[in-house]
Length: 385
Ligand code: PHB
Image (cartoon, rainbow, N blue to C red; front, top):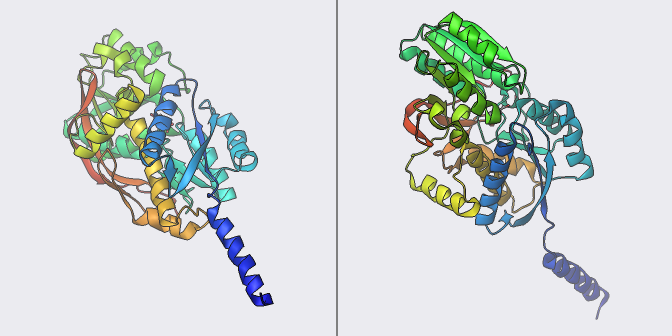
């Protein structure tokens, strides 16, 4: 064998053995609440994410998926440490999280600094796809402004003039109310009082007394998870359910109806998902979810599922080579995602442009009764990209 043939043989051997090596698993860092008032939301997101990965045989873009999980406890004070551990110690390829806006803001800052890919599967903090927007940050859910703004228009159209708002005083509550106020006041209404409680407090008696005394035409609220269950029950127990109509961002009644029972009956909410959409895409998803988890899916399950769809679309475009960042990002920007909620695409700031449904609680369902806002895009204030 000549020297040249020998070198060629060695190179060929190296190539063959490299090709025979399976690509290492892709590490997904799931930073979600598995305890506290949002615990059920974190689990639904993980369930939805895993469901899509399982549908594709445990792989996205040809890469097997390995999960590293952190319970972030919905505690913003611990969020920077948690996310740094995932990035530095665990060296995850992509971060998926979280539910709480304060936690997601810390994740977005860490993602910007480190360049790690981040897909936010719930938290609506406006800044994630606003002032903190970046090419490596994506959201599969919504901005806090979106359901709030849509409901502001609905309540104004119903002819209500004076509204009291009540929420937790942190990014999600404050921004949901701000979105509501913008839509409502544009339609001629006025927010006459803004009541707030510290997160995750759920002692509602004193503010409910204030609402009764203010006698507004209606109330708008953002609560979610365990706090939402308690608020709906307390609102009814205080005798307000049949006196002052209650409107909300749909989180108030999503994943909570079994616990709220009759106290939630007929409530109107706005959200990017609903029961009874009746599309074949949604029916397939709901059947598969119920089969896997013996549970009905909710909006959180959909957002987890779509986070996996987004990752899958990006990875397929780069044949699993997540290092080809420009092509990965480009694929997501161009994609139309076939979501159980209905198709959506991403805005320039990487937030879903989507229909916001008007839903009404009927039995144990948030039935779709109309579209409150068609193809609604968040204004992405402060985003330079
Ligand atoms: C948020 O903190 O952004 C948040 C939390 C729970 C929800 C929705 C938004 O259901």
